[in-house]
Length: 440
Image (cartoon, rainbow, N blue to C red; front, side):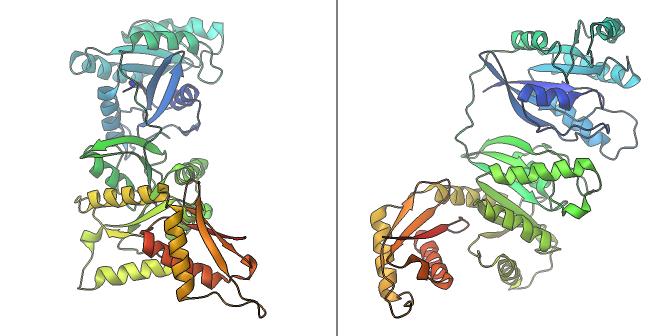
């Protein structure tokens, strides 16, 4: 398991910029607007032979009008408990602010309680020149020890800081997550994605409020409970492009799209009270185009008035909108009440395994011969269309090649017929399938 460092401080001191530099990514959203980062999220960083996880946290504030203030403070405090080394970041250009004093008081309190064994490094950001660095003396009044001057933008001073971080890290065995399944929780804003994440983890991992669009960053969490192990990704709600109200919203949407592109299985969350709307269909099509496994989760089902056939009718309406790719598992859950959430995990794992499974050529040959015997493809201008065999080629999702004397003559309806039978025979529910016809 890798060691963890957490970056904390008041808003707009450059925490996310430094996070992006350490992880060599653009996963954390950077904007001049203070308070952009709300959830704590994770990345991997390397220095020499050392690997460690980095937590970027929301700006810690006191006494503001921000509806998220309390939740952000909870997130920061959880990050302090998780971290082995804490980077307390301040703005060298702004000098010591009242909010800095309050963060320092929180850290001193943490040291006296749970974090007595942890190393806290005071980091003065925006020290782009030697002259600016000379202004760092006033930060000693915070009582947090030596001041480490850096520039998150240019990288000035980060090498020296990294050496201090590595020296302070405890020795832990490295954790390899490269082979774990990746499940992305995606959907429109306020569908309950963060509530599902928190319900699965049993902690306030993501900020949950009734305000749509709370989550802006994609959160990666290593899940290992009850015999299940995978990487879980919670994403910002995906909105239509014309509804972007700010640049930050654009980048949050981009993170969610990338999460779909990088995952193995997309858990698409619907709001039961709204049904499957046009934007839900767009999200589904995005997962389908990227050949991702799909599980549909109908959240807030506990709030619905139900009759005997309510679930069946709802599922049929959903599948009509997904056509022609209808063979997708649909589960009815309540993230708030934790109803059937483990069933959702089991379904995602099943889809993942089937997506990676290689069907033996002998079984495919028997399948296609029996299928063609029962229903021949249509003739082409008096010529008999023959099919000779079928194989599966190596790919990140199932790709099948069928050999024929006239591959271009095989109609789309017959291709759909083969796909449907293939899904039934080998239980490929929720799995993207590609079928290509080649001339023998």
